[in-house]
Amino acid sequence: MKRQLLCTFSSKGSLKLTMDYILGFYKVSNDRVYLYSEEDDYENLLFFYNIEESLRDGLAKNTISVHRKVHTNSFYTINALNTLITTLNNGVLDKSYQVNWENYPNTLLTLKGTDLKKINIVFEKAIYL
Image (cartoon, rainbow, N blue to C red; front, side, top):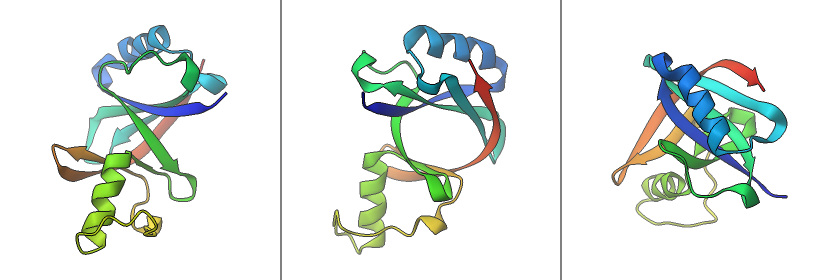
């Protein structure tokens, strides 16, 4: 089965509640959830985890589908990647454009409206289920 990487946003005060919510909504693959915080605001948490794509029944609240470049620990949405490429490539969206991921270590690239948002993230811990 194909897996899908998801990211759920929460706060430190809601850590247990968010974990219970994720586990009630999805069957998490590999029995692991990776917890990160925002570098600029440690109160904001990001939960990264894989699910079996065929078991997905929509996205849970405060959750996005993401992709990852393992060697730089860079997470991104497809729309954010397209916006990044357009920005770096003089306004042209070229799907063959090679992003230098070394410029985006330990980040989550997403969109806020139509603007690219770069969130620097810090690994907190792996939660084993």
